[in-house]
Image (cartoon, rainbow over the protein chains, first blue to last red):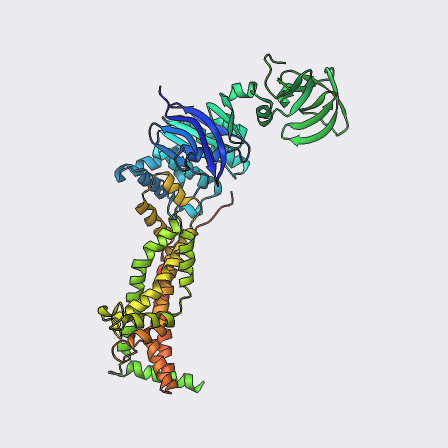
Length: 311
Length: 240
């Protein structure tokens, strides 16, 4: 099926400086793509350009169908929630008779139907974001662009909104591009993750594949590979899932940091060839000796390129 | 204190005495304030909306100009318009000098910057992202303008109150352009000025009291209108 969004050699400038460089991207119908990257990576700028809000400095964006952008700030008009969604539909060009039904459907998809008659001023932060996303869902665009729809929410509200948004986006027939800051959001929402750093696409693929084998050490660190062991000609990067505390483990080390978590502790352990991070349910203190087993991880050469073959 | 009491007594007498002429002055005052505020809104509102929502080169300079207009000296406006309305002057053909229409024009010139500056400011204070979101969903300029006016209505009514307050109490431009002709274009404020000039301080106080009462009445009505939509069950804002 032909792509709904085709981006070729795209560069975008902001305040005279280029913040997005030479991006190639293609989004197919039904695909949910997460743009992931650290602060200042150019994710929102790229999204604005995809939506036609910001101009391209170079390259091209081909949109095959209508594109709706849900901006980061959930600016709602001083009226009821349903009226806000209907207003978005009016902007989108939906004739008046169909607006109410579509607005209610979108609110139901976002588990916000019970808020329909409530004035926007009476909504909590999470509810505002829910209604904000519902406006985009109600428009039923060919391509829906969402800019950090979960920013600034507490953990529980965040999680619940991610789950509802994930369901709503799966129900949508068009393509979705969503900017997220949190890796977990990308895994929850997307079929495909595009990692941006310093305005460049540094990784692009299904979430599971990307996490299993990040193409570069830089991407690996961004995706949570926070342990490293020096190897000949490079290093092995690991995630906590790759490292296990074991009484007869192959590596001896010393605990240098202990962070409490819901299910135990997160340990930073200095070993002879590096520093590893792992989870454990036991009680640990800084300075304790520990033995570790490493099962997994990805090897990179000195320039940070992935080496073929897993550790 | 005796001036004040005498003023009150005289005000009551003028109000209750048929043919005292005070009601004609009240009518002219309301007419001047009403026409100039209406004209100020018709001209100033679209400009204020454009400055509030627009993104164009020179917008900042125009905002500075509008804000500077808030401090426009009425006497200067009066002098400039009087000169322009002289029969041989560029606008002399309009025959607006020493006429009620000329007073309307002078007051409108003073009202427009008030409406422009306060409207633009009210629109710029709208929740972050609301208008941008409208643009992102393909809203037309007209739709954005209507939304902006609706959302900023409290600020726009504040601009209206400021403009009508100026129209009711302004005296410099009215006297210079209209000539302060009794029974024709004299307003309460210019009548007070004339009575002070004639040494009739109690009479000036009487007119001043009437003017103050009129301002209170009009502003109270507009303030009621300003917050009418906000009555009813108070909205509760929750934390999360």
